[in-house]
Image (cartoon, rainbow over all chains, first blue to last red; front, side, top):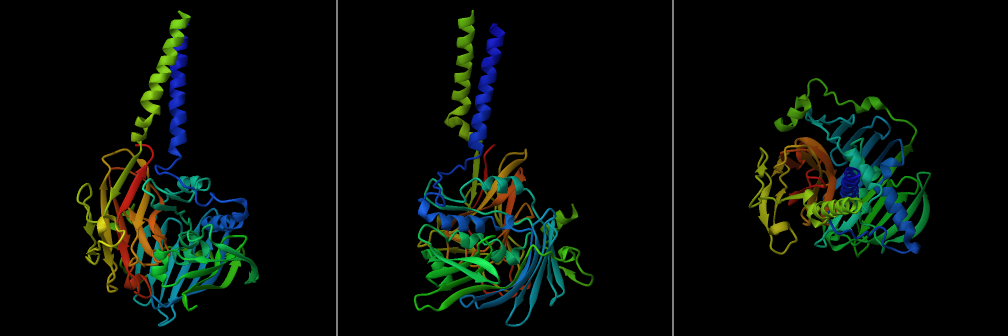
Length: 283
Length: 173
């Protein structure tokens, strides 16, 4: 009897440790202020659309399209074309074109490697991707994505795009701008854009982002179903456009050309991959 | 006999909770902060092109009022933070990058962990503070690097890439 009770005590002790471990392992080491949830029911729409944007890659299987980005502060005018598959075998092709000189860079990803191609210079760079993100990203679905740590500094938790379509990320996975949205953001209503129902919102930039963009106000047109960003305009106090992104074409779940995801470098191109990144490719 | 055994079991439970369930348990989590040009702990280094120049500005919110900035469009360069975790079994580390400087404007700042591509952060659109860039299963000394993606990999070189503090965090250490 004595042994049984002792064993029961030890078992209970171990169970308590395991339970404590499981609970605290899921909580960040920071003091959490759940900014995205700490609002009243009348503000649910902004949270809903922000949540869609922060998890946009879950809301479509494949996507094909193009967008134009004009940033006068950075003297940039680009068009980006993309084909992305977020399904069982993620992969992507994206191409960014400088509208001023028509130079372009391509990015191809098969979910395991990324190939950058500069066809003007006939150069390429090949990189191996880290694939240890899945458990973390799964946990993020049930956790606040924005909070303040113990010293009051903002923390934003980003998810990884399994297809690694980084040239297209500002549209298909617009997490950076999703973190602009807060309780002061106004939901203006719904419109039609590219035959999609879009939620239109507007708000004021915080001082930090405002200084970088040299603008004060933003307006976003967000695909209501998926959270994809279809249009973004940032204006200054004189209503001048200081940053503008607009999707030009869009096909969702209508299939993509997976042959474009190949990361095999073309013959005749010079390998510009830094030596330390090459070591991982060999493995 | 029964009473003695029950008390022993309860005491065992209490001792276990005190030892492992109280504030002492939190020591099993670990946070490694590594600033640019850290004075202790890390051994950072510049990439081959040496274009991440050291800057200071007492008026900014940069960690320790300093940072590294690459804005020379002739180069495709890296900056490396090297963090000794002193742990040689594999742990899952959350990778975070701190940004609070309006000169950091690279729309495609690529981060790598131990030479694997980790994340592309749009520094121009990101808000101030810590940016959590996913996890990496790793051990030992861990190298986090950032790529400026200048000239040949971007179609125009109109932005600057910033490097300040990075952080590794594991809940089980």
